[in-house]
Image (cartoon, rainbow, N blue to C red; front, side, top):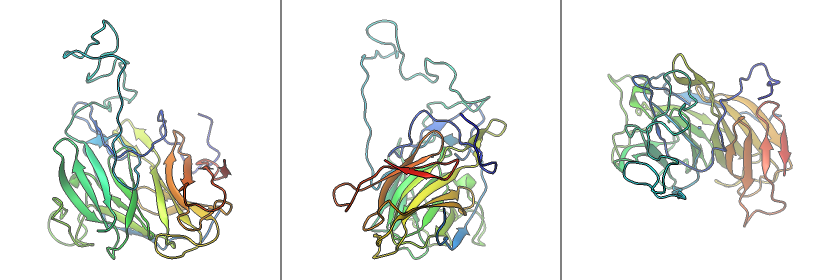
Length: 331
């Protein structure tokens, strides 16, 4: 990877593909050690409301998410026997704790296993203004969380960090981070212990729920794309550090969920604090109506986003925002 031009920004950990629309959080384990978190200018957001910050415990692989839930499926070219070997003879073995490739590519004891003790999917409940955390092994909903202080945020896309935490983009404006593990949540409401949702029928009021890490308000009425950068793995702690979150809004407010005439703005947000660190104005990407509709990041932390095809007026672009130089290109 070429050196970054911005000395204040460290390059994210390389990943082999775009973090596209997927919500599954797969357990990462390494014996007794587990890893933690790690998925131009305009008028700036009013700032983050920090609810809690800290943590340790098990880690997870992650990907960014779309507006609603879905499933990805695939198939292998060879059938497999019950012992995990190919029925046609020597070849790839499936369902092994460590892939045939041997080294997982994770330093030290931070290897990523295939355990089932930590596997969640995050689903936005738009009309209710909440997001659900569902255990994909038991298919039980283990938590449901309000995503904006007024409860009317109309949550849209979600993006999951490598540590399993979720960032939720609010269609009507706003960005919220929620911790996946109660052990990461920190006392913030003045009551003894950690108060957090235990299921679908246990939605705690805003300010009582202590697994909401922070909320950042944006001067927008249209905010959909959200994507975590990978961050950098610290092999000494098995934690991902320096994670960032990309999000995009229309530059001009309009009716809730839509943008007015003009371009769009890409924001780079600190994943730990919710503070906006950089903004990139993109005046020639039309922000009218739905504006930027979905986004993803690549292995270098660069952001890609598109409009919604069928009803978008004018030209339809694929936009790329460079993580290092904070420049953009339309394709």
